[in-house]
Length: 113
Image 1: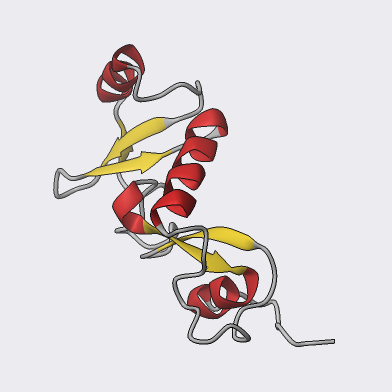
Image 2: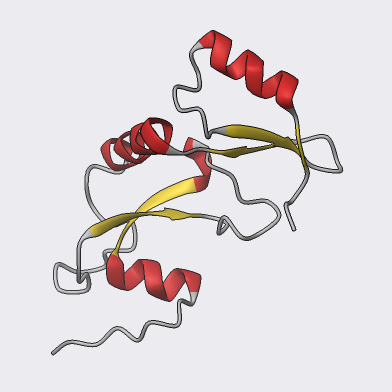
């Protein structure tokens, strides 16, 4: 079940202004009136690049040089499955695969070989 309802008019405005490049990107309106952004394609790739650049291409949870494992990933905070989750720069962080799995409580068990 989607969190909020799809708003074609706001989505159209975002496309017209150039904020959305991909046809799949959409704006949803939550019950409280706040917007939830879902990006796809080039829009998602641009957000990922902006996130990595902002975080200095390093895991935000890196406590020591040895604490990170795996490639960098864009992690939503709060998770995108959370009602407050959204594809916006202030709601994403750069995490290594290990810390992303720990933060989101993914079912994948992360261990060194």
